[in-house]
Figure: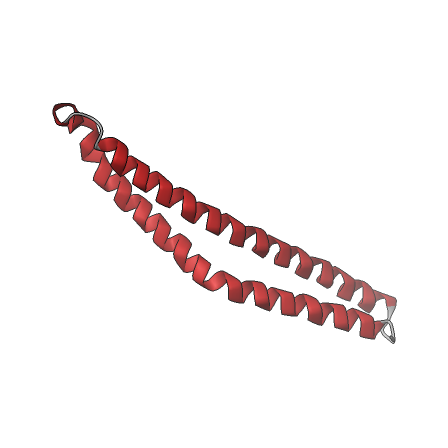
Length: 109
């Protein structure tokens, strides 16, 4: 049996592990929503720019391409994170389970 101090340390490690797992789940949702939002914004920017008569487009048209390119760079970062997030969530879940097992073992159960 582990000492009370060791059990407390295991318990607080478990709490931090659960918090990290929950944070990663929220981050995964954020990434999905952000990806959809950026795609919609880029599409709407291109579409709306085309609705303005050509002779009036000059002041704003010069910024459409750089804006869409910047959105593309951000979307690339978001998609890269989305490719990695499931592994991170799985690792965090495994760590939570390991912490739970360690805590149970420390209680002599």
